[in-house]
Length: 156
Ligand SMILES: [Fe+2]
Image 1 (cartoon, rainbow, N blue to C red):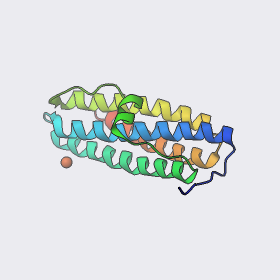
Image 2 (image 1 turned 90 degrees about the vertical axis):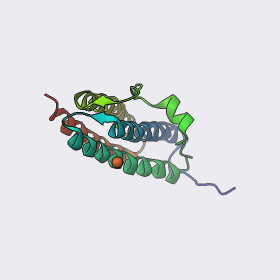
Image 3 (image 1 turned 45 degrees about the vertical axis):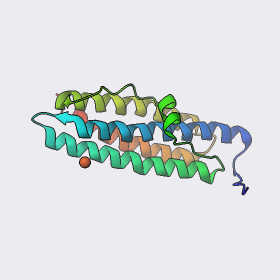
């Protein structure tokens, strides 16, 4: 078996690997939740909400890859399996079936808010342990906060 050696101390690696694994799980689930609502949204704002949801999917998928590969680069095996995501995600249960556009936007604001709160904790926890990983988590959080803004701005 090939071994990827980490440049970090054991203690710092534990902190950073928990942050990156948690971020991976949240981002994978966010991409799934956004697709679920993308398919199920109905109502007068269908088109704009439907398209906006795919922006979230793109952002979440892109960042999940970056976060997972950062973990791998540190010698930590990323776990993006469905069962792991189901157990570890910070996003609550997404309702089954059709969802009207206002509720769809509300669901995304809530989902993004839950992930952002956890990302900000990860930004804090990685500050000393690994500023390189922290930099990635900061960029992820900025993009998620931008997405949340765009949903909130459309739901008065
Ligand atoms: Fe689509």
